[in-house]
Image (cartoon, rainbow, N blue to C red):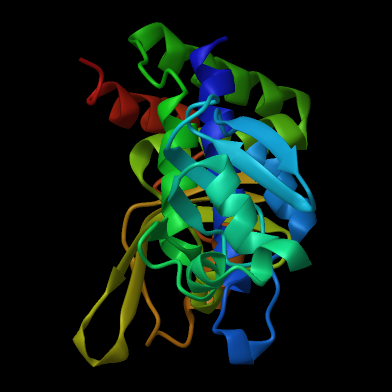
Length: 262
């Protein structure tokens, strides 16, 4: 599998994890994890799946004895114990519950719990990404730039968006926070939280689906600047000068990414 494909998988894993994390809350919040999104995430997870009673389990080592076991429920609990023990604690039969020793285990699982919720989600994320080969060469970076430039020349918006997203991942650029986002514009940049509540955003790169333009701004914008949206709109429409525009943006991002190539 190519570096580009693996990087796209990483981006998708991170996106799914963010979506699930946003849905995790305390018991009293009533929030429930979107099982559809969780199932999508688990397609990247290398542990072995096993269905026991009404439980869906993922085992680090599929076999007898103790191992790390993830239970697919709203708590995302990871245990270190046997499958039989997890089944007893999570889905006991009436006969099992009347046994005093079993009842103690059912009521208190702290002795075998490794993590829950956000901590377990981080484990899933780290292990899933760890399965990907994210080593890259200069030719990989050149390929992303070529694809982006070709898409720009052919007016292929999805291709432009994909190459832009890949470069943003490589360069550590974040999607525009609400204070800097525009509808129908893909914007990525460096986000800096400053004392006093100020946020700066930039350098930034912007693809406008409205004007089909690709632009780059070197000077950061401030959340305290009331004219920041007008500035972004003017740059996107060509009414204000950008630091770089068109294919030169992909050339610039290519050069920045190549600095990190071993």
